[in-house]
Image (cartoon, rainbow, N blue to C red; front, side):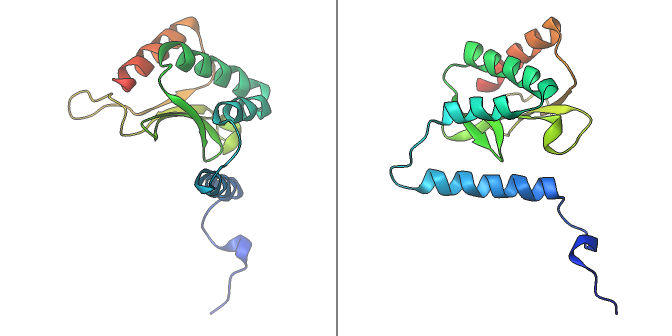
Length: 146
């Protein structure tokens, strides 16, 4: 039996490992008593770090959340901009650059009130945003908050 080198073993990509490390750091930071930092500013900082194509979309989504769901708290989640309700992430923006994907993703977690019969989408691929797309996202955000 031949032993495989670490880089030959199937498993997580470097990007996935980095996201898990970011999440672990977020959890550690939130558990520290007297943790400093402004989660809303951390979201803005993450958006500012993105490549232009991702940043433009993330800024628009952030503005839509601020306008249509001001009750949501801003935070990072696996190093991505996320918005929470009652401490649980309701929606998040995954930039295409995060996992070297063809498109960015607007995702909704199970607390989002998007139920529609027995099957409904909970994530959306985004390459760019048109005014119609922005309107649709605004409607989804309002509906998701409930």
